[in-house]
Length: 143
Image (cartoon, rainbow, N blue to C red; front, side, top):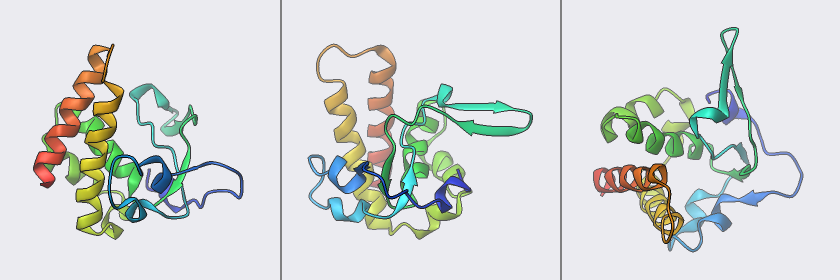
């Protein structure tokens, strides 16, 4: 994730995080940037072999602020048993996390909760509801 956060998005059409989050926040401009973002840290999207990690399934690739992938990882870490503070400590191992203005992370946590509320509105699978719970815990921690 540290290496990925240094990669600029290629000059191809892809979603922008400010656009993706515009329905979930009043400040989507806080998420703008030029970094290539994976944005889908589902555990099977990171394959580890021979001591190297390979990130697969780029269906949600986006352009945005360099700290967004670690922020999204925070929710997955909470979902897998870490407290929000512990999860943010892991995110802090990624240098780009330190470039995030605290107000932007706060806004992103709230927007992420809203995204999971939309995802789980209706016929949600249990893992999705778990992610909503994790997002809510993070937003409460940030709020």
